[in-house]
Length: 319
Figure 1: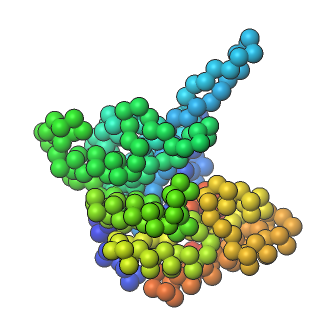
Figure 2 (figure 1 turned 135 degrees about the vertical axis):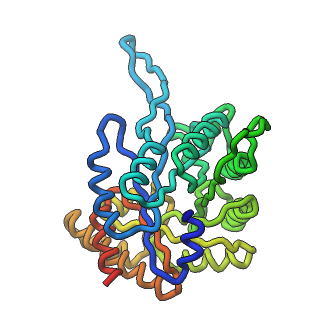
Figure 3 (figure 1 turned 135 degrees about the horizontal axis):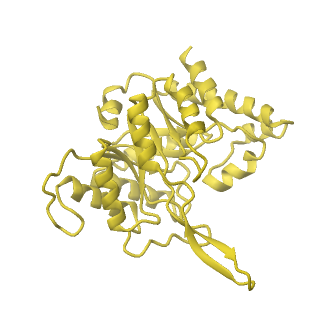
């Protein structure tokens, strides 16, 4: 069963899904699989796997000059997805992104995924490079998620990007996209951001997963505005519990979301990371219960640095 089918057939049942991060190059998969062992016990609807294409790094040379080169720090998204699917028999959803990839790169990713029997994708533009003030597409790549969607749809229709027919097209890909209850950082306003989501739906996106948020009112307002604009696809809330004191400032900066004043007020009272982690568990549990009360049954958790917290939260919710 595809992720899309699962979402549509289990609207009235409470389900969890999780996002995991491939390990850093050279560190092995033991920690990742130990984390998934814990998450698998919760019978997730699916697990999605982030992808990180190459980025520029600077290395100082002997003569004092700096050499810029590309490094890929977290390879293995497709391999990790295949391993999870084979080992745990849980539906997987690897990220496919524009950032750092050419059209040809993406085409080979699609071929590899099809060969491995992986048919669910999350299509994203990806983050801009740290050194860039705005997103710069890779030469020969896509500038927008809508272009990536169009490539995947051409592949689904049986054609490579250059128009060559695929002799054995195989099963089509299902895919979701991202959305932003507090607006994408590069969108000029919420209305235009909504229009972009509507375009993604009209091109074939079957559901959307939100960026993380801590204020449910912003999610409820976002969904209401989306429905008014004719966006009818499921909008799955993405949730991440705070787990460290430093996240009070790091998370809003990194993910462009606000910490609600009541939560911020409690965080500053915390003396240790463990205090912050317990507060994160309490806040997120209540946040999820409020989502349930508003008829939201599919909740997606961002687990990076918070696997144990997510496990504790989901167990409380299942009581």
